[in-house]
Length: 240
Image (cartoon, rainbow, N blue to C red; front, top):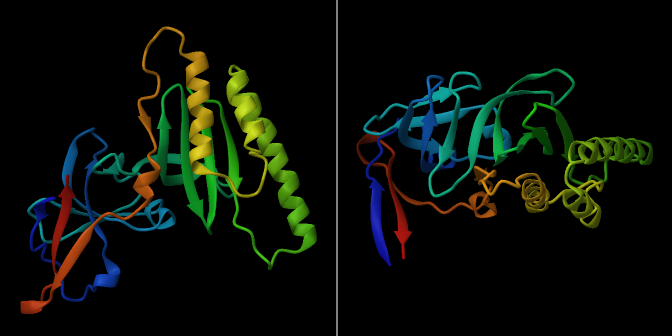
């Protein structure tokens, strides 16, 4: 195993603690299309959908970006990829950093709000449909649960209609029971992959980007150095 130090002694204000920062290398993409390398605070998907805390290479002061301030950001090693999108999550469209799970003739985005995962299917003509994955809760009444299931079935029907050009994708949805309450991220990506296989008949690579489930697992290790009033992070990765 060979260890390569990517960033050494990233000096951050002493007011920050190890519980407040989880650095991973990556890039931000400006609204003009330029990329800037540095460190991004790797947080929950819900937190990342609302803000991106970034330290540019060689800088000791970070900056917090909100959706719209930049085009997006992405973690290294085929990591998570977020883009600014205006999406209807709670009945009122607003800007989010949506996780870009698949990019191609059918895009797949995800935004997390109050622990619910909102998956947006977007065909290349702009037509869009949504599925919601909700964690089970013992606090939900039987009447509320029935309403949730009814809404899920309606959303399921809209997504199937959006996928109408691919019988394989629709069959995959049926087999994976995508109308249920809790959805598999990998399963949704597979459905969109099926769609691309059916609609891309000219031999081209239609899927430009695809979510890697390994990107949901934290791979960074860092060592604190609190001397001289600073929090230093020596960030390392291992290369086989």
